[in-house]
Image 1: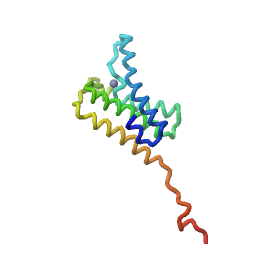
Image 2: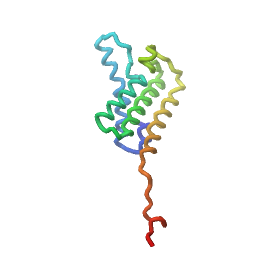
Image 3: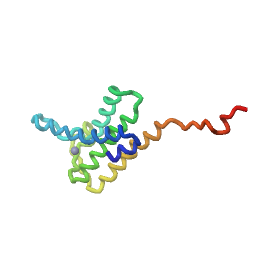
Image 4: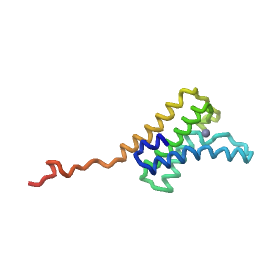
Length: 139
Ligand SMILES: [Zn+2]
């Protein structure tokens, strides 16, 4: 949710927080005893698929929505790393093994989350239109 605040929008802050929490719902797959790689949602490919699905469903031009999903994923990885549970299949399906990250790397995941949503927020801002400047005065 902290990373979502970089969007300067309550709506996207909540959305990034919700996404960060929902990522752990992949534990439900483990409950079904299917032969699947655990923690599939803790991967970059899951983040990209989420962005594509969300943008198709809710708005093709809403890049902030996609950034909120990526920020939610990175924040979640940051929290898991901070909590000492830093083993993810980050590059699945290209590298089908769990990758371990040292405890200190949580800050890099969180910074990447803040930067991803912060940069998109800046890029999506409409240019400031100064109607009171001298150039707009008609003589
Ligand atoms: Zn997790």
